[in-house]
Length: 250
Image (tube, rainbow, N blue to C red; front, side):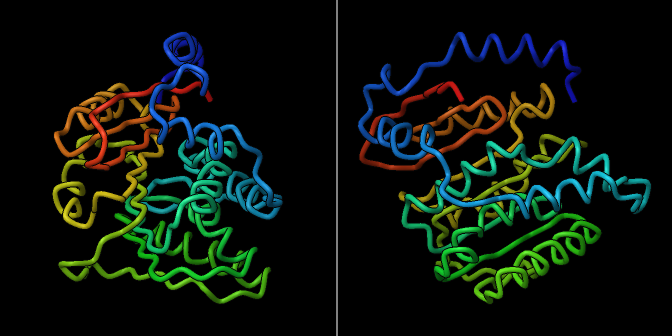
């Protein structure tokens, strides 16, 4: 992970390159900025952040991996988690595919509308690459679910998908050891992305290699719009618009 000084310099460069909603000429991206990015979340996320704190204080380890270190350094920051909640609240998100290791924090933000607002989701599929984090995530989701006494979450841990299954939202969590792991997953699951799908990379600045992968992704022919939000990157596949790249301050 980049050290603090490099991250500050990197953020300053990103901020100076970015714009706000007032500099946008794409109605679709302007609406994203106006109605999603720069809005306030309407839910209380105290329980989720308490879960993050508990994990940071944990002494649990598996194969040399510290849950505390992972939760402190690899989980999504709260402001990006709240953004995930607003995305699933604003857009007609009925199916979600989540790929990569995470401790459950990201999933709880993703599913908070389902749990707290008693909404339904047609399909939620989670594909972790490490059994350890499958277990941690399952326990975290279960605690979150039981607290609100809702039962709308169905997590599928097998790798079987029907050929015609499209997801409204695919979320990929970057792996600290191998940025190029993303290409393996993308090649495997890109056929489940439709023209109205949204692909989110939650950790594009985990390393220089991760950021390079992000930039390569923005140049794919099928990607028609990309939005960079410093740590998070969002890709769209809408055939009705020309390919454009946006850096928004957040």
